[in-house]
Length: 331
Image 1 (cartoon, one colour):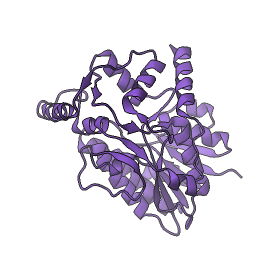
Image 2 (cartoon, rainbow, N blue to C red):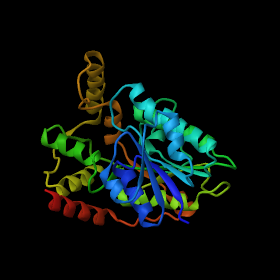
Image 3 (cartoon, rainbow, N blue to C red):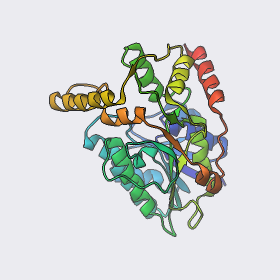
Image 4 (tube, rainbow, N blue to C red):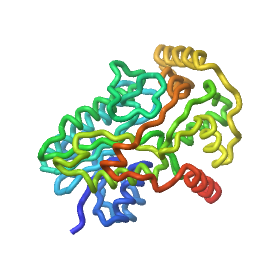
């Protein structure tokens, strides 16, 4: 009999890719959300109505599963602590409690490399990189709390593994690409310095990593209680990559540049203005974004390759080609 897996966030970009891949591989998939998604219904995914903030709804969705893949989270660069705390920390706590109460043997959570971002270059780092003492992003802070609590919950009865995919993109991306396009069209996208090497993740590769983790995770297995960096394994100059992504969706390249120190100063000023005057939307720049854009971010993937047998199935060039074809078909 096929295994049953609850995928939180299956109505979203990465969660949807994971859920589809699991269905393709014979898993029975469930989803918990406030909304009903016709695309999930078409895949035969059982949908439970409720919120991660409701422990009773979470337990109902978890009951009877063989595993849980916890993907749902609030991303973004701006918001209140409560906005991030409820889904990212409280939601994860409810998942952990439900898994323990229902004797679920394994849990894979989606984390982020930003949980160990120390505001400088990260070149070829591995999972031994420590958590920083302070965070410039509420997203990173709350995801770090969630990751640490989840990994601490690893036990002989509940195996927990955390995956840290970096900058996920691909056809249908509702986050990274739309943000780049909107800023480019508004004339607000600038190169921050010359750009460091950055390793990103095609959504197909990120989904594969979750499938592999579910297949290999078990109490006492090599991946139990550990976190893993996930990426394409192809570090590329940030601004060259940004321009390739923009070009794939028919946008002009970014040519204007501002110094990193100026970008950081703009981030400080923007955060103060948005906080003091409660301005709508997101600031045009934040300290976290300024630092991310000015530094290198690529990771040693050896642990994921060894413990999960992770090997990207889609190269950067192939991912760009798929994105181009998708845009041409949908524009």
